[in-house]
Length: 172
Image (cartoon, rainbow, N blue to C red; front, side):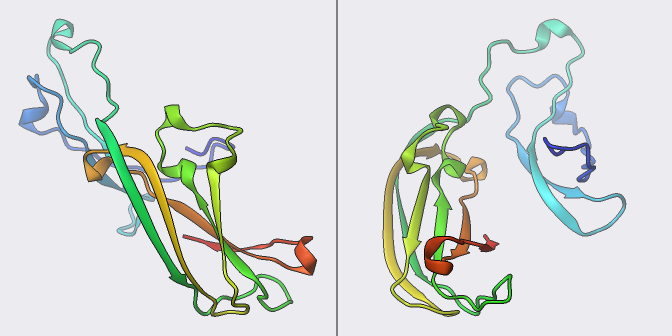
């Protein structure tokens, strides 16, 4: 479900396995494909685990579902962009990449008013094929298990009209 509307995004069918019935420990979540109606095409994934207990007293209490985290040094090498296309009638002039650092932070570590929520990477090159040749180094806590790591989101913008307009070109 979408937070802003009740638009149907897709569904997943999860089959219970024998080890999911009355387990002695919580199973490791698995990524399951999200499908739209009966189509074979994937519309995303959901990280999911399921258990079933025959007696309510067997359900473990007080278990945190947050995976263990540890400190990592994240090193990003931003080389360049290629074949950028303008979303308007003017050609791409001065693109930059905005990385959303909050997208890979724990929910409890995110801040609404943190100045370092985004990192902008600019290039001295102009046009549709700019080279950045930039390094970004971050120290942050990430899940120890890579299957729990969130995706880093980024958007590419173009600076137009002396900075008065910054249209979104795309995201990755």
